[in-house]
Length: 148
Image 1 (cartoon, rainbow, N blue to C red):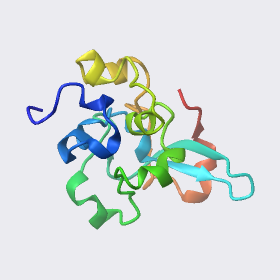
Image 2 (cartoon, rainbow, N blue to C red):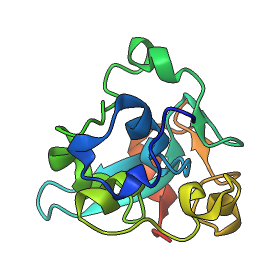
Image 3 (cartoon, rainbow, N blue to C red):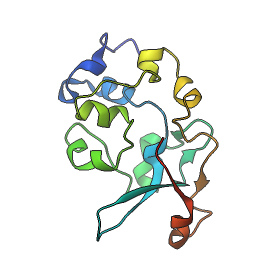
Image 4 (tube, one colour):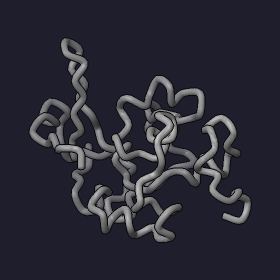
């Protein structure tokens, strides 16, 4: 993380370098959870059914750099795309918080100094997911979870 400017996370998202953008991720893994969006109400619900590439222990993608080869529908989050995507990101997501002009949570590793605080705070999905390869899509509604 030597290429990162001090307190870069306080800058507007469009001013971040690619390395700073990537470093903003808090490592919760919740963006990799499958969500149910109801067309008639616009309501969005998170499930604990995770993308098949999510490592349940590390809360990271097992094939991040090549994920689109395996999961073509995986969203490419960028400073430009966040405007359309922010509504389905977790409320505590660093990208969403900064897009909304809010500060990072105290448990974010850039604030706390530890990548473990996201897990200690109970925000991550560590140990709580089931792979989408194990649950048919028509049963995802049985795995709905509340946001922390």
